[in-house]
Length: 126
Image 1 (cartoon, rainbow, N blue to C red):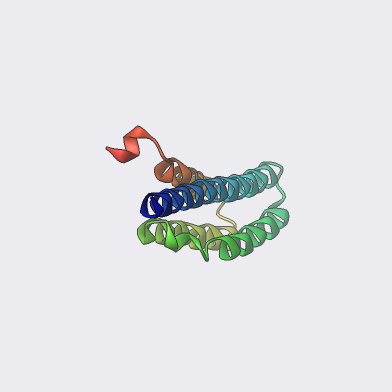
Image 2: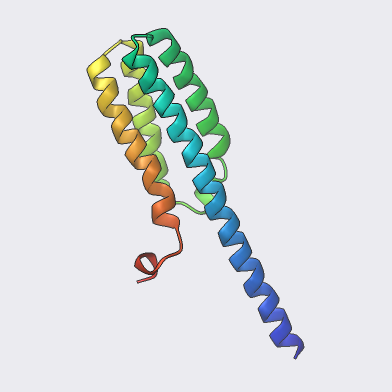
């Protein structure tokens, strides 16, 4: 009976950690996407300096939140996001507005894909 209780406790802990990690990923990605939205609004209004400042905040937030992500995410996806962020930063510095828009769209898609890929559903099980 103790073994069964112990296994049940371990099962509950694993499920709880999974739910917590999915919630944390979703919350982080929503905030990252919100920052991207603000950058796009600044670009649309012609406020390149404000967009650069918001991008620096996005980079800081990414550095803070992405520290624990390698534990549960594929490293290739994280590398792709970091490469995209580096390109976006370079385009902002060179004021290549058209290239920035494309890179922000790609960055948004990659970030949005993370919680969808890691969520617990039938498609991810099979």
